[in-house]
Amino acid sequence: MKKRLLVMLLALAMGLTLAACSGGEDKKPDSSSSAPTASPSAGGESAAPAESAPAGDESDLAYVKDKGTLVVGITNFEPMDYQDANGQWIGFDADMAKAFAASLGVEVEFSEITWDYKVFELEAKNIDCVWNGMTLNDEVMAAMGTSVPYCQNAQVLVVPADKAGDFENLTSLEGLNVAVESGSAGEDAAEALGAATIPVQKQADTLLEVSAGTSDAAVIDLLMAGAMIGEGTSYDNLTYVLNLNTVQGLESENYGVGFRPGSDLVEAFNDFWAASVADGTAKTTAETYGVQESVILD
Image (cartoon, rainbow, N blue to C red; front, side, top):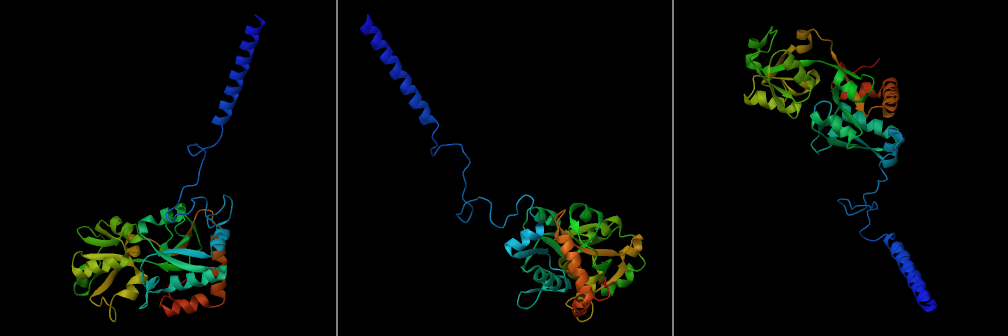
């Protein structure tokens, strides 16, 4: 009897020992573990946070300085941002962006964006600012951190020069097919005056529409009209006939630079702009591109 009891006790002890060992094995990590692991990026490297990604409470200014580049979102908008014969971005905004980046001790990088997606591009950190003759309207100011105004502008109606007389003294654009840059202040102005709008991706493309006869007119910024249409330009067959701000009883528009909401780059830009006005850089650059009458220098 004692022997049987001893055997049973030994068997029970061995069973408990094996169960304990088995539980220990289950807790060891292996290749099928559900613990978070770094997945490879498109470049084959770990998708762990990149060195250029800002920490949760890190400032935007520190983020830009850490990665060494200021990425500026632009479109092709002469005389503010456009490419020279060598494919380099120049223009009043482009040149001032280069100077701003230099003042921060970083390189500038230009990224041509679709204007409708400018807020998304900022939020996704594909760009660090929008600097492209951007009108400071309520929508923009609600979605971005915006700088002081640095330039004044208005929306104008561009038409074939030989038909200019047909468009004088208009108080409405009803019945007209009008080319506009999608998501722009020009689109808003044209729609407010009753036009049937033809949205395109760039302001420059609106001029192609009018020149080709596929739209009756275009609405673009006065600054662009002054640089791109009329005698001595590629569109000497076009002219502008109406300041739509006057027709609608609106104030002239102000341009500003857009940053992420709460970004300390806003203050950095405002300080830079004040210094550029004081030392004459803003005035000299404006004269280079013929926009000195529109740039705010006081």
